[in-house]
Length: 224
Ligand SMILES: Cc1cc2nc3c(=O)[nH]c(=O)nc-3n(C[C@H](O)[C@H](O)[C@H](O)COP(=O)(O)O)c2cc1C
Image 1 (cartoon, rainbow, N blue to C red):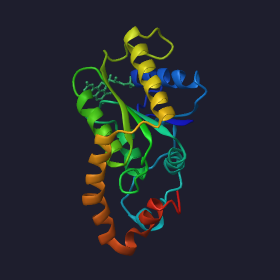
Image 2 (tube, rainbow, N blue to C red):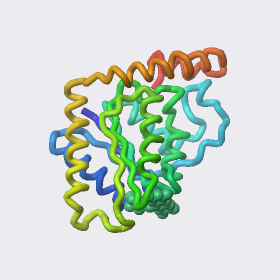
Image 3 (cartoon, rainbow, N blue to C red):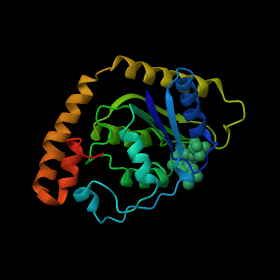
């Protein structure tokens, strides 16, 4: 089993990382092959909107965002974690979403997903909804969402974590593992995705014709 974990906090030892590392530990104890990425340590340029990926299937910027997107395509599931910045995902997460071929190309189709948003005040619930929508629009199966608030800097990696954080992480990791092992179906999510895809994404892409031929090839699995 291969799971990708994405930390979109620029701080690799903060609250988001504490939860993601807890999930990672729970998975590695079960011999899962975990690929963990701190987006802040990667080379990842912003999308500049050339739209050539829709025609060719790949981005003209050959950096880590493109590489991680390929690792995700080859995985069974993903854990997306972000701090709340101004009631939304972090800038790092937004750049990754824009670059990652998620929605139109359906990167997460059939993959098992956990979403994590941390905050210190209010807004983490709004933030996690952004990630949930990304997962469902991209064809993923949402196994578990975590929206949690703690005072800024109260939890750092290496320090003793509150039992609440450890409990949340271990529960999410276990749920993710079980969902993949059982190949759990989520009928309501599947119906929701079918409506979004068949009525929204597919007709839009087909109307674009040759300009979106790379997307169609990705849907058919001809390229990853
Ligand atoms: C620029 C910035 C904006 C923030 N905006 C919010 C916010 O709108 N709501 C909130 O609850 N916390 C906000 N926070 C606090 C962080 O979301 C919170 O402390 C988070 O857990 C930090 O994650 P990290 O420790 O993984 O970096 C903000 C922090 C920063 C640095």
